[in-house]
Amino acid sequence: MTTIRPLALGVIRRGGDLLVFEGRDNTKGVTYHRPLGGGIEFGETAAEALHREFQEELAAELTSVEQIAVLENVYTFEGRPGHEIVFLFTADLTDKAFYERDEVGVVLDDGARVHWLPMADVASGEAILYPDGLADLLSAQG
Image 1 (cartoon, rainbow, N blue to C red):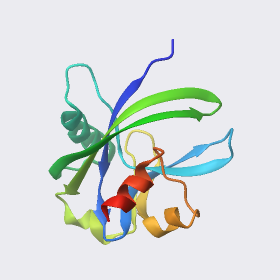
Image 2 (image 1 turned 45 degrees about the vertical axis):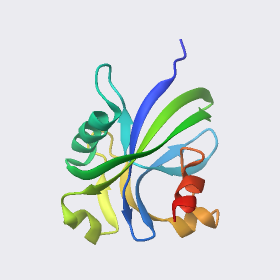
Image 3 (image 1 turned 135 degrees about the horizontal axis):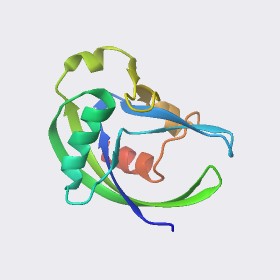
Image 4 (image 1 turned 120 degrees about the vertical axis):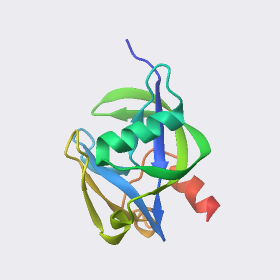
């Protein structure tokens, strides 16, 4: 059965860069980037899910968490349809060391590369940023 998946993602910026993980859709043959975060579990708020996911993915704590938008994302990944409701939050990492290196590391539970993505690369079409609509939202915010 196909379901709609609720997600909480953290928009963490370092100047003109966005903290993302790198993924691959082998069916489309593209590499893409997405802010860190993940699924909201039953009984947990989107903000609680964001904190939990950053703990699980980077062993990182967040501060200044503020919801900025909700996006609906209907997509195809690896040839299969998907549908997400994405709660987007701005946040800061409490450990400032994350801001000092371009290669932040890997997602602890799946090994995906975590790095700072220049938003200029997204604007130029050089890099793909998901979910759809996020790049426009961020450029409108300035």
